[in-house]
Amino acid sequence: QKEVEQDPGPLSVPEGAIVSLNCTYSNSAFQYFMWYRQYSRKGPELLMYTYSSGNKEDGRFTAQVDKSSKYISLFIRDSQPSDSATYLCAIPGGGKLIFGQGTELSVKP
Amino acid sequence: EAQVTQNPRYLITVTGKKLTVTCSQNMNHEYMSWYRQDPGLGLRQIYYSMNVEVTDKGDVPEGYKVSRKEKRNFPLILESPSPNQTSLYFCASSFTQDLNTEAFFGQGTRLTVV
Image 1 (cartoon, chains in turn green, purple):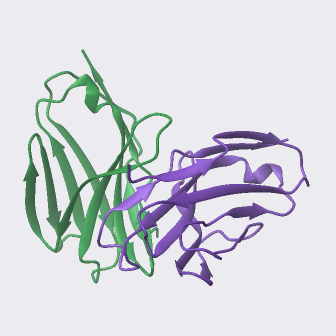
Image 2 (spheres, chains in turn purple, brown; image 1 turned 180 degrees about the vertical axis):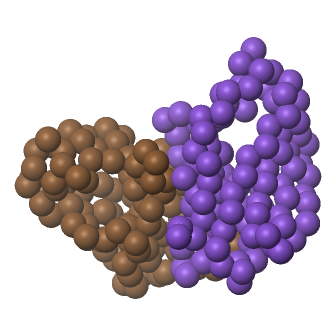
């Protein structure tokens, strides 16, 4: 079983839709949970991070962690074409960042 | 501007011809690492370095070497490249080894080994 699993998509939605991106993880000791965004032909950039359980909101983006089910989510409200990118969940563990496979999102005008 | 710089951005080489991909960061970060990104497999760590002269293997180190002689530089060396090393490579740096802070990534190096 992979330490972090993410549905690779691709996911295509119309502009204005609510997007839900999800990951599961296996190690209950993980405490920090991150979302990186990667535009085509670019390196990943940190979008949001949360500590332990709960929600964190930043504009149209909300990161949610449910430690009881080892499930992390990223919600995008009022999605825009500029949100089209690959979204990667990442968890620090064992001296490295453990990444999910990434979900490719396309927001159509 | 704070950044991680990788060179070259694109490289096509032949099997067995030694190559080096350079990585430099200007943020005085202690921690640096190399990842490869492959379709369906995501980002996998190759090697990492917690400080000067301290390096260790990641998840997929076979066929790669690294060195950390200066804090800012962390080159990736392929002594004898093979076609299965065709991939997209990223260098990353972080302020500390805890990795609870942001990791900064380079623009990537797309390597093709024929």
